[in-house]
Image 1 (tube, rainbow, N blue to C red):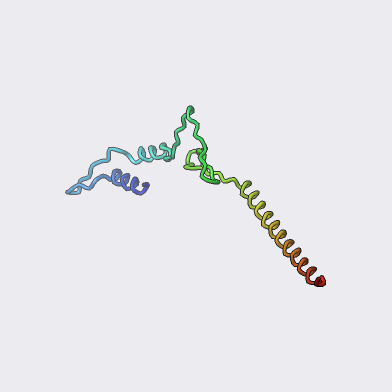
Image 2: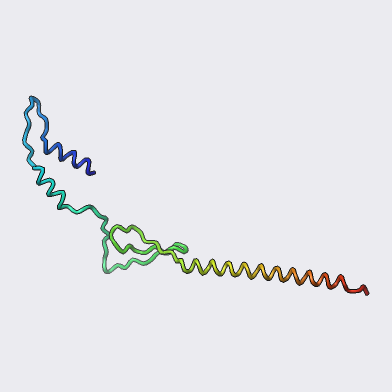
Length: 122
């Protein structure tokens, strides 16, 4: 965009080449164009806010989409890290408990088989 603008600026500042070598004076001076460029703010994405409409957060599974806080933000995604960590810790704990219970059952059944094998036949 700047390249195109400076190209137009150059053409306006130097004037169009006319047949016969005659050139016309530019109606806009280079200094006035530079001043206008320095005055104009850079384009930004403005999000209109209406005080009577409060946007509600939208949930997609574990993710929550909330309205942006500042200009330039398009979407704000909230991820419940604490909840995910707690779920992972509970999952690991449950897996360890199931494994320990399975090993305990196997040990008890092995001990019962050994005990029954040592008993005299009736």
